[in-house]
Length: 571
Image (cartoon, rainbow, N blue to C red):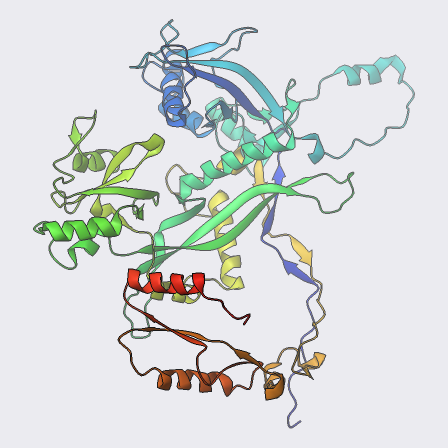
């Protein structure tokens, strides 16, 4: 009828969360190697990057363990082994034992600087694998075994023979490479063709505690995401997928917005009952990463040709004052750096990289596969690296990290996502981790599933409870519950005016420049604007005190002197 509207839809009782259940294969295992890295003097090496370089030299480098002891492995099998070995500074995770390494009861296995054909480092360092521990899933993830009823022994001792026989179970994934299969036939066919063996149950693995298991799971997750996406801080992005927002006139705002996937493994228990097993879950979300489209070099040149741009002494001083100590972001790997200095007498083509015998332009071509557009353009940007070191970056490969204030105000419009977009983003991230659901990039996919982690196709649903509308009132006007969604018209009827006899008069201290002679007109305008609201606090007809000030030191010095020495009223 007239004035009637559609009935209010029923309040939902369940909603989708951003949590994906994850099943762990029955015969899941992983391994942890202890590692000791010492220098020539026998002192422990603390640098993570140096320890990682030494470990890779000892296992995968020229003359390393794989080359010496695993000659039967093909190049593809060696790369496959690299995918499942995770260096973690003081220890190393591995999805399966590194072939050819037998841990002795005492001592360890030297892999660098230990003689017997092990490679040597230039600094005389040594690396020893000190221990090996095999882990299985935590006991909290398993259901308690059912209480068996007593049974009589079968004639002939068949029951005893069955009990004494070891049962061998297997997963639908290969124990020698990173492949998993949808059925037993596909897995057996793979094993026949390659000579591999399925992942099976084995004795000797102790249950990992929850912290050890989650740490390993997240290490594998980061490797799996890193094979498909580019890392940016703690999130991962597809560097080829971005949007460039524009204003209402179609002009670009000068930034690119990337969808950033954030995910981490954790624990979930569907019921508070301790008898209910813990469930491994993946918490995923979609965030936005914003990057400027103009490089630091373009910003400095202001439209001029970077190859021929010349900076005079004043321009150099202004640019150093503006950019030194600022944070910049590298466009090729999304890492942030703090600017130390700008070297206008150096270019990427003129400054050699220390110890490598090549220029910075040649380094980026050889190591990063980046052809600089302006290799002869100054300046070269000095930024802080690891362990207080200084590294140099071409200005065309970095951009400012700080956004303009006007652009920051628009971030809620250009860098936020609706629930539907977030849900689709979580589903897209899951496809990156699921074999066959996304086109393979880089090394291929399926690392999570091939190591025993299986993501569900749907999100966990959670119960929804409706909060009661709180009491909303202003100046004696109360909003009824049925108008909780449209309370503004009701509040507009409120009368905020206060009886002048109950108002509090403020003692205003007026600070003005000493060159201003007539201030009363400006003060009267401000006073009338405030007092016309009829609020509790009002301004007097005249200022309580007028303080004349000058510029800079003569400004704040006079104000500090007045408020430090004058006897001020309470209000």
